[in-house]
Amino acid sequence: MQIFDLLRRAALTHPDNLAVIHEDNRITYRSLAEAAAALAEFLQQKGLKRGDRVAILFENSVEYVVGFFAVFKAGGVAVPLDTSLTAKSLAAIINDCQPEILMFQSRFRRSYVEIVKSCPSLKLVIADKDLSSIGGDVALEVLGDVLGNSTAVPEADNPGEVRFDRNDEKPHELAAIFYTSGSTGTSKGVMLSHLNLISNTFGTVEYLKLASDESVIVILPFYYIYGNSLLLTHVAVGGTLVIDNRFLYPEVVLDTMEKERVSGLSGVPSNFMILLNKSTFANRKLEGLRYFTQAGGSMAPEVIRRLMEAFPTKEIYIMYGQTEASPRVTYLPPERLKEKVSSIGVPVPGVIVDVLNEKGEDVAVGEVGEIVVSGDCVMMGYWNQPEEQDEVLREGRLYTGDLAKRDEEGLIYIVGRKKEIIKTGGNRVSAKEVEECLLENEKIAEAAVYGVDDPILGEAVKAAVVIREGCQADPKELQTFCKRRMADHKVPKFIEFFESLPKYQSGKVNKPYLKERG
Image (tube, rainbow, N blue to C red; front, side):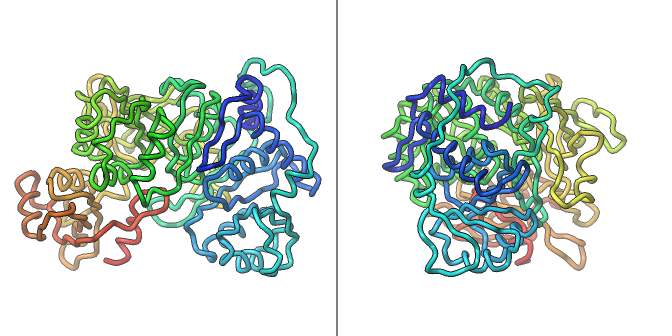
């Protein structure tokens, strides 16, 4: 099977279920499958061949979902693009993956000419509005016209059993390329097959116990692998995606959650910090909500405890993953959260996780090693970057660069990233440990820790900190706070205050930018 089969099956088993809700737009699975089939037919008529890339520059929307599944139906490879990037950065990615077709949202019209002129591989742009007045030599079509003129319909066969035939080559074909900046800031195209994405989707559905009568509020962009996971898991069960792109106004998002009675909320640590610190989140009943999921970086135990206190009856899933793992690797069962609040839990069904030392041997209980992932979720590789690929892929296993240890029950605890270990004065300091210490201070809303050049120490520990509204603090006070809780060499030598930390659109803190500032 391939990814479009998830939508095909949902349209056959739950045709009248709402697939996507976005403001006033609502579309059922039957209508979504019909629209995706119509667009796929058009893509093939325009010469799209199996394996050709189709780039998608759309915000989360019904149109994005239609385009995403249409690419798979047509046999193409989807390349979701980060909508927060500059025209120059977008053009660089498009030139790297050489797509034949670009699906383009008109709100990014300022980038249109630069992208089109600098990307000779492009033969067609499909936009939500007529952009012919802007110029450019590439053929242009309007999405609404394409869908309105089509007579294509999805297959009307029996949904049958959803399973993989490992003798079939199709699941192993390249499905999508997700570009990720990673810890170095350099964009890498992560190649994921249909097998990668669907196997991880099934594993996630299993441990989250997702069902067709459930819905999730989508505040994470679909071009981000965590957001993409929400899309695939809910389509897989015939559930509903409630899109709200207005997280800058958290009260609006909370109102949407209450209005639509969503059963799930998924976010990265900064999402939960903002909700807890700058909204009425903790005072809302959210009666329809069953669970929270958190991934996209470690969330400090203090923040997890505040979430537990605010919502003692809700299930909280702490998860760990990487784009290169499609993305889910581990999860902590909610019933273990109180006693294992710092743990990332156990492997996702279908995923194998080892913690290895530098010799490739399993480490003992309590010892630190690197997380190494195996299974159908492990990426095919990096697009056009064989050297980087060889660094992390060895004999089909993914070397994540994340350092961790296991307890006596086998549960895993992240210690830090290899690249986020600060070497200061001969000592090794985990940025994660210092961040968690700072967040124990009731005056601190957010904290990011990183190393900066130092003529004496080699590297010095620096913290970027956001103070909670109505509070005041100075560097010396916070340094004293840390000294009472950790060794002197771990205490930040420098502390800089911010009104808000710089973030990617996914919500992750942009540490490369902070390091460049010094």
